[in-house]
Image 1 (cartoon, rainbow, N blue to C red):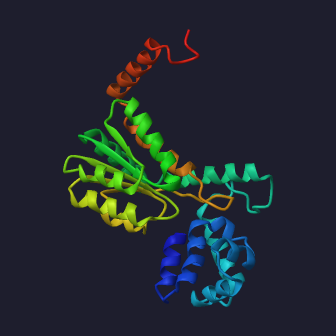
Image 2: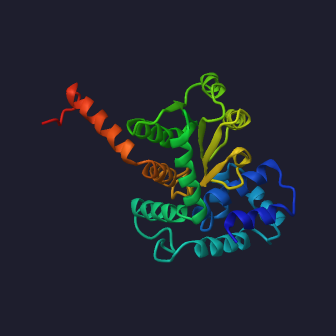
Image 3: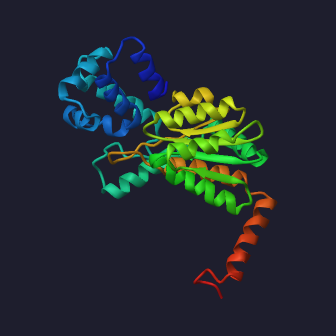
Length: 278
């Protein structure tokens, strides 16, 4: 059972309040950190007090935080290879720990379900009359990569990363035969959820890259790619998301894309834009 499924099973047995939901959110989004954190460290990461962490553990049917942490640690370590991640997160320097964690994230990304969704996403983008990529916050970086490199490959990909009103204008133009790619990690805004639903309702093929299989965006997704975002610092790692974007671009790298890319690079040379030209 995955950590997500285990927590879903536990939380289904009780009604968690908003503060307890924040604790559960950290357990799900940062299992490596949480599986070794003290009750005070977890409370600080979740933005709650210590007693809330203890009460949440008890609501999930554990005696307290140490017992819940022990269960989480066992499930986290079972989900990764001992050769890929150190059993002690304090071992080694911070940079090395982050690199190890990112290696785990990329490895965990390559499930049969994700690979099938990535291939289907690439097919949807290639077949679409136009593709709009929508995101916000930390998801904007991977969105830029998909939009920029996809355009160089000759695809009609448009970024909708500006104000919500501008994003809505782009989505309103989508119909059947078009494609929307929504990239969302960490926090989900109401705007992003509404725009994804609108594109689905207008008949566009919807591709969603997110970090939770249980994300509300999954309801409107034709193709869902779930990207791990676990980091050794407070916040998400984008490495898994970028890897998913690169995998989609890899699927799109056919002869037409190679020719289009060559044409763009020739244009750069003709315009003398690059400092490293011969």
